[in-house]
Image (spheres, rainbow, N blue to C red):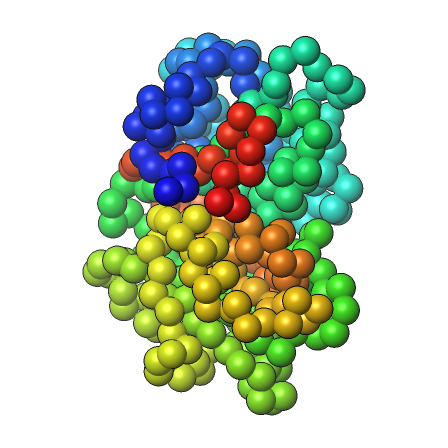
Length: 328
């Protein structure tokens, strides 16, 4: 059994409640960005770095800044009076993203093992995919925990979650290494963005397309997800539709290993993580394990009310006491 679950339960089971850990998260417009930093503060860690990721100028700019400021005030009211804040652009380079981690952790040999938490709740995928990959390879990180906080149940904006998508690109650190992939695995969510362009390219070449459908979404989530499926022109038929638990990142990774076990190691499947963050985390782990390329369309604008409220928080141990438990 892989170690993941509600964050409080998970920490109690592993006994990992030491104050000597580092937290790399995001200060954003969504209220749920507060949850893990305040938990870290309650556990006594002094090492909190929060990325302030700025969208290009949009019609939301004033409201976005107001919401971020409110969340900063809430963190201070909750007792987190100081943190290391890094202002970085949404379209930052690979090196700039990598430095947010490399400059945060101690360099060289350390007497004590390092525990790092990466909170992906409000962190764009082009950031956390690379950061997870680098953290897994970091020689001094003994424990690595990815965390994710849901919004209050049923509280996604009814408006567009994201706007102004760029072209389909490979995510930093997850490019095509050899031949182009002949299988595409797509995780669908509420927005199609530029996904139809990518799917059409694979269709034109008569390549295999597999769709990961998150469940149990419930209403109105189910309707929005099926709208995306129809928007991108995917044929809804078995065995090319695979249902995945929207919260089970490690289950998604295992499903990919089982579904794609016939893949040629020199020509791994391409991945398109357009679904929920935990599903995307599972796809990230699979891509790290197999060398799969990852394709995504980066929106240039996110709705400030992307989500509302704070729900349950989940943790996913990727390294524990030096062992890469996500591979077990």
